[in-house]
Length: 282
Image (tube, rainbow, N blue to C red):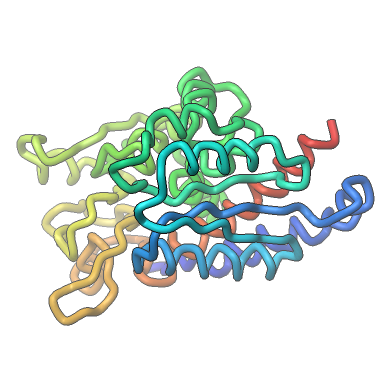
């Protein structure tokens, strides 16, 4: 069984960015810059923010954080957020979600400049993904494609089953895979005969958020299993949706958790930032 580790993919993306970065810096007159917008101090937001900042700087670019208290007023937040949209020194904006309930998240997302929307959450980028035009896809979904391409996993003509229908992973990933001519099935909590469907998958992608819920009973022999889930088990240990030890006896290739898609996601964020900075030059 081949282990599909994310670090190898991340390193390749970083090398590609560094190779081209100096010429972009000369034309911009500065390094590409990401603004990370966060309200409050949720542990999961802080963890992702640390990893994102580390990866952006590791690749030779800049990341700044713009923080607000949990009880920030909606008007205050919207004015500050709009300033970032208009700031010529900021190439990419990453909005940590969900926002506190007093903020109009839907309206704020609709206001994100699509050219700075490096996590692909704006309606413009969502529509672009649907219609197959050039756009930023959500980083988690794009990370799966980057990993598959790096390891030579060809989706064309394959039966791909995705477990999960979120706007971050499941739905956009289905659109990306359809572009690659895969035959895609999306399953969710109301899907009947789930094992019957997953056992037909050449490639099984899990994004359910349920610790080790996928066992070898859900996969066919020699299937490729990509685990997008990041969970904490009852012992406080980080794990994915897949029972790695059990499924590794049957799968031909698998991503570990940690060490799999998570490492690629922040690298894709950096890649999108670099691409956004390039768009500024056009």
